[in-house]
Structure formats: C-alpha cells, structure tokens
Length: 328
Image (cartoon, rainbow, N blue to C red; front, side, top):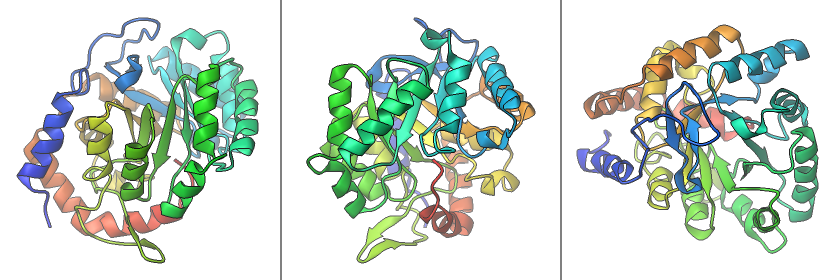
C-alpha cells in the first residue's frame, strides 16, 4: 500500500503553513549557530535543525573526558539542541550534559525526558534533573515514551505526571512541556489533542515507523497508513508544536539501506523543527553537521518512492523492535 498523493500533499501543505518549518534561516537571539535553524513551533525560539542525542549512543563514550569532548565538538560545530533523559544511565547523561553546558546556558536548548507517571515521583526526578543539568530551568521536559492508552491514562490522571509538569511550568522550572513516543501514533495523537503541550518528539523515518493500538495491547502491523507521519504529525503541525523527529536511522537499522544523508534529508523534509541523532563518534558529529549544512528539501516524488519501498519491506520489523525499545 503506497502513500496517496492527496495524503502526502496534505502534510506538506500543513508544513508550509508553519513559519520556518521547511525554510532554514540564520539564527536569531541567543541561539547563534553556523548551522541552519528553524523556529521551534509555538516556543518561538530558533534551534539548530540537528540535535545531539544523548541517549544510548552518547553513553558509548565510556570515558567522561571523551563524552565531554564530544559535547564540546558539537557545541563548537553549531549544534544548539541537546536531548537527554533521566533514564539515560540513571542520570549519567544529564550529569555530563550539565557539566558541558555550564557557563553556556544562554546559548543552548536543553531537553530532558522523565518516564515516571506518578506526579510526585516525577517532580522529585525533575528536581534532580535541574541539579544534574546545573540549571535553574529546563527549556523542555517531555513525558517520556508514552506507549498504549493505559499508559497515557496513568500520565493524565489527577496527580499524574502531566499535571505535575504543567505546574512546574507555571513555577518557571520548565519553560515548555512535551511528550514523546516511538510506539503508538494513535495514542500520541490523542495526547496531543487533549493536552496543552508545547512540543512533541516522535519516531519519523523513511520506513514510516509506527504501530497502532489493538485490543489487549500493541498490534504489530505492516500498514503504511499507520505511522507517526500519517497520524500524529498532522495533529502536531495543526497545533503549531515544536516537533522533533527521532529514530531517523531506526537505531542504525536503516543505515545499510540508505546513506545517512538521505535518511536525515527525508526527516528534515517533513514538517518538523529538527531531528535528533545519536552520534557515538566525533567523526559522526562532523559528518552529520556537514549533511545539515548542505540540506535541501527532498523532492516529494523521491520521498514517496523511498518511503513506499522501505516501509513495505521493513516497517513491520522496525515496529516490532521499537515495541520494547526504551531509548528515545
């Protein structure tokens, strides 16, 4: 089953309505960078279109000095957006990011993610994140990895994490509240519809990652229409959210199918603000920076051809892998 022209153009039209989404421009304000930037949705801030993922790939820098050197390289090359989470090494990633960003707070965008669904426990983790990141406010905190409908119900219940994060935003500890998912685009779309999120992070790649809800839990499916690109992304665009594409390489699964440049180009040709990529080697940081410096939108015909081809052969397997995957 291929993506219909009407469906694809609908998403593209929505993107055109969002200022700065597909047109990179020089940075404004404190986020000065030689890299192309885009407006991060309703936040109004500009961020580099490439983000440094500080999850499992970042933790492959086992030596602290090497990890800090990688962050220093990313900063010097113009990456202004850093994506971490409490669950990445039980706070280790946040700690190292905080060390590297000390004294640079006004020049970078810090995002962290918290998976706890109980509001009081999430608040305690948030207070720890502030200390580990060595800051008095975090630019964006995501409700980390919403899975099925039951999971969302726990997060949005009275006393749940969504309520806690919105209160922390009122207090000025969080500038923006978001939600991430790489398993269920239907549930993510529901969450975005029902709650006043500022940003979202979702699995967006050329193989059309995304599963769907089914009775008794997740249902692995090869349907090309059941994807974050087709279900959750249009909701986020309509609400002018800051949109982060993740799983661009599908945890390296797609790297032997297409060159990294094509994978990044596809993701950034969607109506997103930026893509976050894990880069476990200095050479990969340099390579990906060069890719985004030369970014040009991929023709719609090429996007349709690549996504149809790769989704038909690989979507079900990728969905199955991400069903139990914890590293956003």
